[in-house]
Image 1 (tube, rainbow, N blue to C red):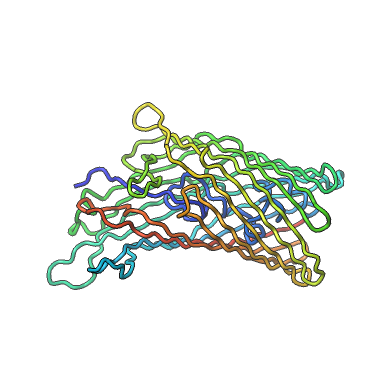
Image 2 (cartoon, rainbow, N blue to C red):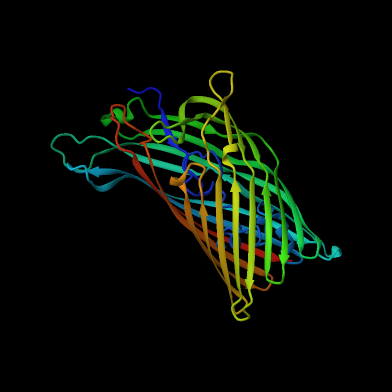
Length: 448
């Protein structure tokens, strides 16, 4: 009988962020997507040289200088859909893989809301523009439910009876709230700066063993029901600084540089601490009791470069954007206070990453944009977790009112152990975990 429940779970790579890209369970770092305005999201999440909006505060504040005159109010609504399938290989007598048997599937929808104000100062000939806004930085939302089936009594041939569930659940998000400005120092050159602080919203983590049939409990549910977890609190956080530079090159091109500062966070959570899975050599988490742990995270800085070119075509104007971003994840740090009065640093070799984004926008009849983009992201965890994402969208204008539509989708697949093994279970082949992620974002803009 198992009296202390031990869960070893994978912390997967980017993608969604937060709302994002294969970030199951509790991620060690936030996704870099899912927090954009619809115009930016539909354009390959490019923001260093394109798509001026409140999102520019966290991409390249210098892009605020390319926003519309007056004051623009923006509100974005996002809805992400995540599908996760866990399957095991079925092998015949000749050691050939016959098929994959999916034993757990979860389909969930997660809403998000963010927005801001951007504006200009007319008495300065629009040389100085500003913005304020709020946006998710790290989305913790994740729900996992796995059915536990008992054994059929002799003489019965129906499906194995449902005796309980394994449940992993996390909710809430860390938001950035900030403001910034863009200043046109000389013709064709803008510089920008923004400062943001962090606010936690409804952060909760829970692990639960649910028993629905006490008469047929086997090793998988022995000693239960049980529930561990509780609120996650943000104790301290550093200031997030974004800075940028843009320069128009001729009439049709623009280059830009961006910088995002390192971030320090101190979180308190119930009963988990990081470890390394012995079979996969990937980072994971262990949940052992109801003790509160303090986690000190240092997320490294990011550098970015972008290039935009507008093709000289009067009937169907075309804009091409290309961006690259670099993050040295070897500088990532995770330390925690364990059961004793000491501090332990989690040691894992996270890799440096490059992030490539590109998009094309066709302006049909000079009024109706059609946007499509592509994102290729390396992962700090290695090649297995690299991802490719397709984005698309459009917009509709009604005078001062503009509605932007954007979306993205991707797929990631990796191998991991059973996260809820039975006590008597022998070492089985690694499971295949497949995730499908997609998100729709709608941004409402009104210029006063």
